[in-house]
Image 1: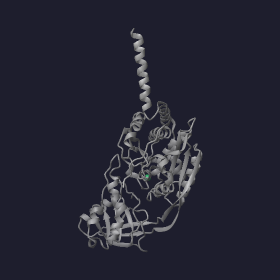
Image 2 (image 1 turned 45 degrees about the vertical axis):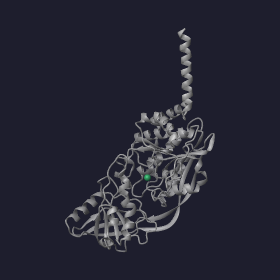
Image 3 (image 1 turned 180 degrees about the horizontal axis):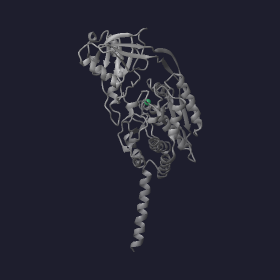
Image 4 (image 1 turned 180 degrees about the vertical axis):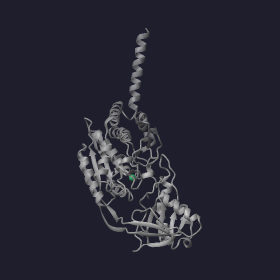
Length: 468
Ligand SMILES: [Zn+2]
């Protein structure tokens, strides 16, 4: 008597299990494929060869330079070997700038040289250089509050230190001095800006980077100082005598010119017009070889796509890899991409960018409507064994991704360990030896899970609220 009842109960349970499995957005079959891809990535993915190739064969590739042009050619050629169905470029327009020399030295009271680097798009000093007393500010807020009288005719020295953190969260507050410092200093009549590098190292390298130059009427030269040199100026100032510095900078603003977003697609088998965008930025600063920023990201997303292209059939919708141009000089490639693709935005199902170096992924953030959280929960089954924890729903999808998120496109963020990222960021020391091939394998494993499942899943992800 018991046996048929048990069988019946068992059958019911099985049926219920099927119903509840169907209620989940990602099918068991898709999850199984993603699991195979993940394990293949851990075992045999080779993003390292791609970043090695980019740094050795191209190297520095600041937007609008010869290096940038070679990077675009490299990306096109490389993509053609990786199994994409379609590879193409889209032109963007960029402001161009020539970096000349930048010398700085203390001339009084204790003459000695300083290690500096021009911030991006800094104007030159007058022929023969300029010499002036420095005036120190704790941060850009203190500079903002200062009277013009205190600043006029002087070299503003912003001396704010950046906090080290796995999330890199010290960067946001510290970078304010770089982005706004020159403008505010110039408005108050300063003759130049010296900025303690936005970085966490104590190496004698300065960290370059972009500042806002748009609409600044009388821009002045702006230089980053290495951390030890900022310490030196700080110690001299403590002695109570005026500190005079001589700057000699030879940069040049050039006419606008072309750069390119480089794009590769794996065409969807059922809904080719619907697109999952994964990206990284192809340009870099010019003093290192851009291995971490963002050669690693380029390699991770290309290798992710290669693994998906190797599957026996295409995912349901299109996977589009966009290697954005001119990210470093103001998200230029992403902004022009979104402008040019406005009519297609509703079909961009989600976006994600890898642009935080080559550390292991440790957190999975999203930007999804609340009723889609279960998709992320299902993905976590495959991500958790990689040492990844579920994060928050505030992902901005990466710097270039944020331009899409601002238009309501959902986003994913595979957050890397950035503990030492800002030791190297935007310095001559951003080179290949900082990239650990094993960490890249873990990155690709996480990326291939997320990218495949979004491209393959039955339903969509809706839209997220836009911020104003
Ligand atoms: Zn970057």
